[in-house]
Length: 133
Image (cartoon, rainbow, N blue to C red; front, side):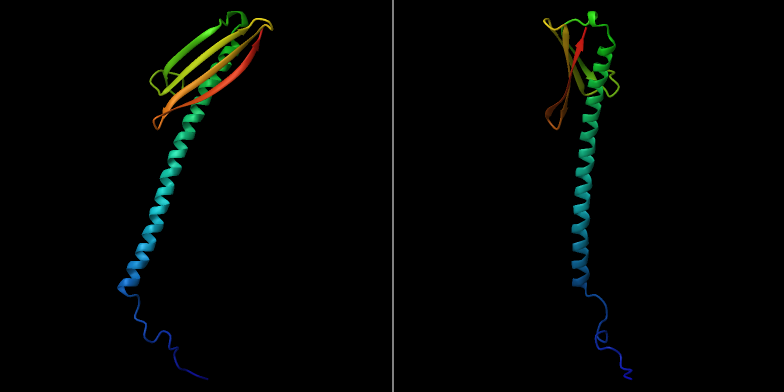
């Protein structure tokens, strides 16, 4: 049996300063990449929340109009500005409701569009339905 210690570790005293700095640089680059990814994901989550809120505001209006008596639905356009997530004043959303009467078939086409500003651009969610008298 050979009781000699391996020669690989005989002259090793640990990491040099250069090796430690390179390891720290690689770790920093990885952490910065993760932070950037996290920031992007948070922005997309906020945007998805605004789309969901706009869709809910439009759907709520469509449901309200479905409950309304057909004969009391007047043709025309109504715009509500500055709505929040619950439909109250003080928010970023504008909701436009248009009722078009189709005289030959006895139906009314209802269009509800919700607009808001996001990153300098106007975004829109539009829902349409047909109500029959």
